[in-house]
Amino acid sequence: MSILRQIPSECKIRTELKRILFGKQLFCPFCQGKAIKKYGKRYRCKRCRKPFSFTSVTWLRGMKLSLQTFWLLVWCWCNKVPVDQAHKVAGVSLVTVRRWYEKFRTHLPEHALDATRLSGVVQIDEAYRGSKNKKYAIVGAKQIGTRKVVLKHIPEKSVDRKTAIDFLSNYVVPGSTLFSDGAAIYRKISNWWPVNHSYERHNRWEFTLTSEIEGLWGNYTTFVRRMYHHVTPEKAPDLITEFTFRFSYPEWFQSPVSYLRVAIMPLKQKQVHLWKTFPQFISSMQDANLLLKLAKKSLTTVPY
Image (cartoon, rainbow, N blue to C red):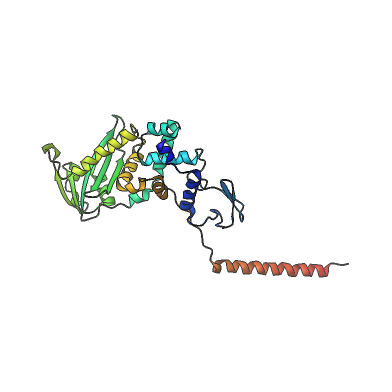
């Protein structure tokens, strides 16, 4: 009950959604008109007469949950509450929890991951997961001393040199120091991408240069097992992306508000410039004058 008491009222949740979507002033998301009339929980624009709500203009369209239940599910997901626990505390089915967890995951801003660049001293390694017939690989890199990591799903049983070079060219800044294990795919890697490469051999019990990236695989496995219990090969890319964001951007998951501010794109009000509308006004006035002249001419020519 202590958790449920922390859930804000529906009025406060609507206020927060309004602030995220529209900013300080409410406007029509279709015609950008400012004359808005409220009808219960919905709104209608007086100019274009189209109705809307704070959920119908986002990826929350068609949501059948109450706003408080939705808020509670976001809170559970942000705090890594396992699926079976969230099902009990929110009072919804396991299928509903998994479906909404997947929605929260897919609406993370992936452009932030594409813009990630690792520099300085970087550790790189690969891991292999999956069943006997559905194996896949994960290539990961971490900038040591920071929380900047990149994990990439590879739908192959093994990682070749071309995949490693593509990964480095996308996420590692040239001139960085690269630490890896003694795998053959990293040997003379500086001939294809300009990095200062050093490696160690794990079969000789050397784990100094890759200690942080090796520990990251344990963190990923623990995250999946505790929160989702297991992962199928089809869902693996999404879970890998979620873990990457959770590790690199922990501030996004501090509260439902912090998550929704990055997951819901704010609506931008288009500014109407007078120099664009003035010619249309002049042309409409000319058309009106022409119609007026034709009307007067027709009245004078009508016989009595």
